[in-house]
Amino acid sequence: MRSAEMHKTIAHGCSFTAYKWPCWPKFVPWFNGGITMQNKGRSASGNETISRAVINSVMKYKQIDHVYIMWSASDRYEVITLDEGVDHLDGRITYRVWDEDFKWSTWFGGHRLEDKHQYYRRHFWNEEHQYYRTLEHIHRTQMFLDKKQIPYTMMVYNKYVLRDTHHSESERALYNMIDWTKFIFYKDKQGLWEFGEDHYKEYYVPGNDHPPPIAHYHWVKDIMFKSYVKCPDDEYQKLKDYWKGHDGRSRV
Image (cartoon, rainbow, N blue to C red; front, side, top):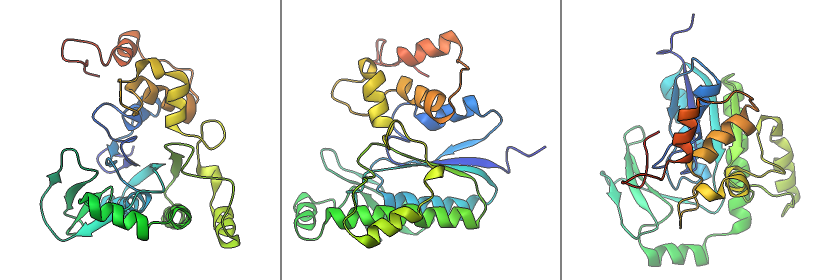
């Protein structure tokens, strides 16, 4: 029998993977018993960050049974500095986290200063280039995991991560090199965002576009595993009532 301490299942993504309430990686073990899930998602991660984090996890943890990846927005970029520490800026578009594995800080979401961020977006950011890079990140990650012979499942957080039209023949060729059988989609290349909006909008926190726990649970049950198994009624009620209670939420 395999040791749970030796073998891990790892999830990577942005805030649709790891947020301030339970997200889909929490529910994967409910439908895939006996696994040890590590959620390595981080809010505001772009696809370059996610791809690098996946590769680092594989190199770091060795014994991995499965990797789940939910790709993020193509327009996100990161800034790397050598400043140590953690810096959360209220009201800012970005935040910094020191990465002990790489010995650098990643500013998630772009440059910490609004004027520099906007300057970069105006003069250096290009939608076509960013989308092409997303395809590169997906393809590179697939090649790496295939070489390591690690099973994996890929998803997208919304329908804008991918597109059917191509800016160039090179982009079309790269698109066709990706193994799309490794992906799980909602409808036509849509993701958790659209799934939650279509079916569980009544449970959303006002003013917050992140799907609530009930949507994450059903994403795993209905989309990822297509399971007819239901969780106990009391647990399901907790998911539905997550934002009720005197403190605005109930524990799940």
